[in-house]
Each structure stands twice: as structure tokens, then as C-alpha cells.
Image (cartoon, rainbow, N blue to C red; front, side, top):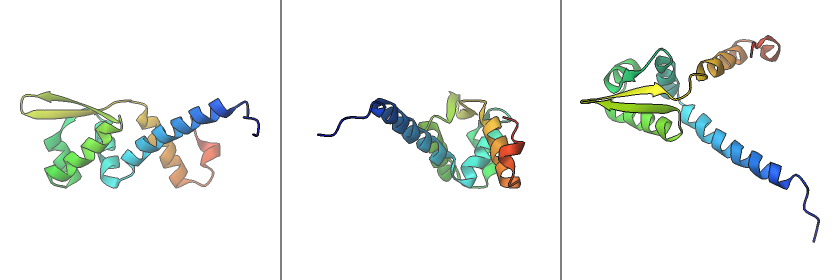
Length: 114
């Protein structure tokens, strides 16, 4: 039987982190969801406002919001008949700035302010 590498536990943890990160990234990987994230970076909004902004029906938007909430991207609060959403972690604005740098310049790794 071959010896077990010393850093096996480290790789198992890294694999778990990568799996969790992929869930979060996949939950953002849709133009409507990115639009919702962009809108929520300006502050919490109710489903009706997000639906009008996204230009889709309530059922479709609710499915998008459910995916995002399940991944931990959003938190929501019901107030009366309305449900209000907000971003769970405000540092997503920094993440989006890095994406914008990557998409606008080939030298993004040199220009990034992170």
C-alpha cells in the first residue's frame, strides 16, 4: 500500500472550499442574477421593485432569488405583504470591481487595486 501524503488533509479542505465557492459562483452566473446583485449593492429592495428592474415575471425572478438565497448571497425579510432582499456580504462590490477590471483590460493583474 502506498504511503499517504502528509498534506492529504489540506487538499481535502481545499476541495471542500472549492466546492462551496463553486456553488456561490454558479448562483451568480446568470445575467439576471448579476443585475439583481448590482441593484442590491445600492441597498435593499422588495421583490416588486426587483421584478420591474429585471424585466421578468415574478415567478422567474423568485426562482433566481431562491437560488441566490440558498447559496448564501442574499438575506431576506418579510414585512407585511412585501419581501425585502439585501446582499449578505457587502464585499461583493469589491469582487465586481475586480471582474470589471479583468473584463476591460488584459493587464488586470497589474492594475487591480485589491
